[in-house]
Amino acid sequence: MENQEAKQLITESQNIYLITSKEPEAVASTLALFYTLKELGKNVNLLMDELPASLGFLAPSLDFISYPKNFVISIPSNVAQISQIYYEKNDDALKIHLTLQEGNIKKDNISFYFSETKPNLVITVGIKDFVKELPTKLDSFGFLLDSPILNIDNFVPMSTTEVGTSRILDQQVGTNNKKFGKINLVEEESLAEIINGLVDAKNKQTSRCLLTSLIVYTGNFKENPTAEVFQLASELMKKGADIKEITENLKI
Image (cartoon, rainbow, N blue to C red; front, top):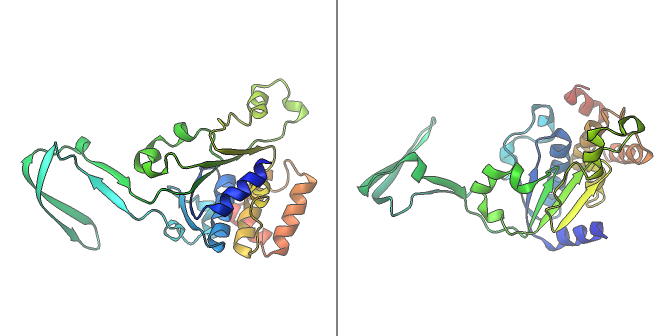
């Protein structure tokens, strides 16, 4: 039911922001989602500070992932009155010069944020607690607040050797996912499987991202090797994903 609602929400949304945790499984799955949504003609932005070195082969650079472009520097008028503004730009830096008519400016008076159109949908991947894990991002990306959230997360299946450990308690509640989304897809399977159930991988680029995520999740098919995992891996390889290329880059 939630899966169908999530598909419908994605179909109806044109401006979409993706937020991923720093875990390689989540990053690779989010890149797959990014490429697929782009192919569907969506206006997609991925908020990510840096791309893990091992996953550099999945994207040319972060600039390619159309980060928000409208950056605002704000100084309250009750702190200082600005009479002139100009800038210098060279190969080394951009310098913005302000001439004060009155008042004084301190570093704490200056705020920085992005000003963008409010998205129709925010999709988080591998995020357990939206507010707790993204406090600094929310300061800069206030335009994301109050947008509907599709919360995608997973947890590792339990094994009999883990019964009775504190780790099991976390797994039973979806690794403490706070279920902060309008729709919460928190499943006991790989992120690649969850996302492939939402958007079908149709090209090589998306397929290699999903297979990368799947390989990370399974430790190169040594952990949680379900029939569904091998079936998806086979389908992704048929669509062009090169398992040798992926394992060489991941060094596993």
